[in-house]
Length: 186
Image (cartoon, rainbow, N blue to C red):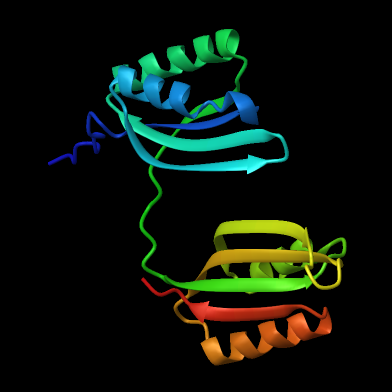
């Protein structure tokens, strides 16, 4: 008997949206309204103010026709609303049972290349970066420029955590970074 191809469920259509607008014209309400009016659901989203711009990332889910309706609404919103948009169809991420969630926090005197070196360390060790927030600020006491980063990473389950922690802290010491690597607490 020939096996039938797997059909996707009617609501398993996804649209990833990135919206950008000046801070005083935040696209949040406008975008949320378009998502609701199209009949889609919001799976997850993030909002950040970067410089003078508001940036929103949204993953929406719905039936094929609802996602098509949302795509049309995005085109109108970009044309009429002064919002810059990037959107495309995607799929839901497969669950990863082979990675342990850890939190990494790094603080250091700001200098070029710190983020690159951290990302390269994680990549070299097969560690996925799941979320990241970086900022730069002036230290209150000294006025020195400080780099600060927080990462949520996925460490492969077959990794020897103590050895990785030693490697990471040695790496950070060599760059004069203050860092922690701790399991994520839920």
